[in-house]
View 1 (cartoon, rainbow, N blue to C red):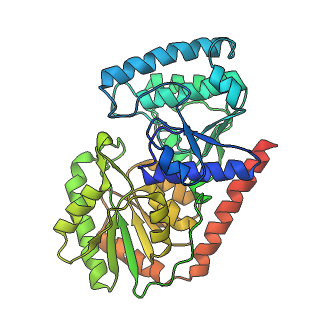
View 2: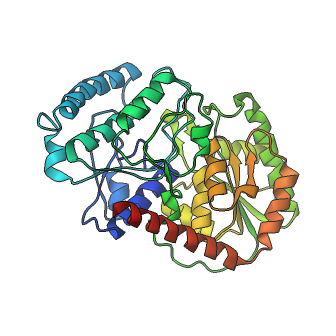
View 3: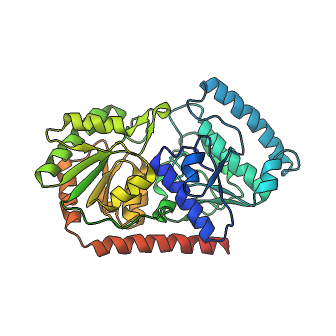
Length: 385
């Protein structure tokens, strides 16, 4: 299960990687519980999608009041099923599945909204799966920062019987109200275990710098009023890279208007501010992006999963951090020196690192990709024993 859509390439990468990993660990079939119309997209990879185990319309599918009412009714039914360990309700869950897998990501944090419905939905689903099936598997994700007592209480209740696997602990440590969780085992983000087969690319005729843009103003970890500075600094980085002989491509991971997260619109804004002519790639399909990252010399990513996806295919990356998770995840694979705060990075310093990484040995990055992938599989094989 996952809270967001295939149309966010990072979430799609997580889901595809999760499906491949659990199959490699012995699952005979996998279904993705999605709140979006993702069936055709995931079907292309041999995966079927099913409705979420607790009804909750996707963002944009009706008013917030209507979505809340549907979730409230589903929550009451789920709480009855939890209290009776599935003897009442949960028929579909008991009949069709052995396990519920909470897919990785970064949505278990305190948002700016007073009522964090997505957090409640994902945690209640985890609790339902654990109560009914007795087995809920948590893929590596970020938990926190948790800045409200109610969010901490729900987390501790929902994950009481679930071995908690996080991809980094910085997000937890940044919490005002740090939850007490079971184990807090650390395993790298599952998207380092690529779920897409990427055909080999011919070496590009010139050095390619891929810049991944994002509207990060919803984050509670950085200063939203610095967004215009971010656009200006990214445009300056574009100009520095072109002057250094790179072919620069701007792109993004998400064009979900209902989430106010249109990365391509942000990329166009950056292009408009740059003095040099650059390309904007509006294709945010996950398979396309894997190929583009593999064919790039360096990726500078505001989206965390642009860095993860690039490193997983042997391309060095530099992260622009809008939440603690970026620092934590990249430090966890020995890449913490290449992370900068999104609202305060120096384009000349980043450009210096781009030049450093562009001249590094490709074997270094292939070895990092293999080492991380092997560690993920080893971690889950040990957890399953």
